[in-house]
Image (cartoon, rainbow, N blue to C red; front, side, top):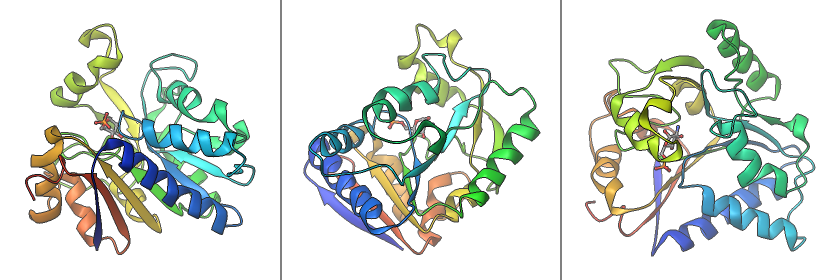
Length: 242
Ligand code: GLP
């Protein structure tokens, strides 16, 4: 079931999302957070940083696993998702480096990279709260529209639409990697709780399909209709077509 929390704007979305994450951190002895990249969660990470700086939040016990990473980019590459997470969150709070996990894009053996990531998530006891953004084509993590739902962490070919959407983070479209490692839909669906964050009018059409359309691998995020504990925090613009 998807519980919808409608907020006025992006700033409110960021505050609300940070509150949910903070509650999870406070309530659990050893919280396992599934984290996402993209621009949507940036405001949320900013609020979490502020809460930490104000002494309201302690990340000592937190373990994190990120959804995805570009294949072929080393962790220290400034375009990698590991680098992004360091900049946006990890380097600003007291989370131990060894407790943060992002798929390693520099591993060329895709099978080993993916299997070891699944084993890691298992060894942490699974994900308590998974944060998700939404791609314009309905992708979550890097699970692109397809004819089936991939179960586990795997290597994907990015679609032209995703490459174009993500080129804003690179100098040119040619520099955007063509492949990525991503948790599978099954990995994501096993999280105890999911927090889906969606902002902006440009996401309104796809969000309508996710919430009201048939569940189909053509719209990967539509599978969330089958999860028992999803909270969608979306602003008025994103919900303007619902
Ligand atoms: C990328 C990421 C996704 C993210 C999506 C949307 O492709 N792999 O995890 O949710 O983009 O990004 P944004 O929040 O910038 O719209």
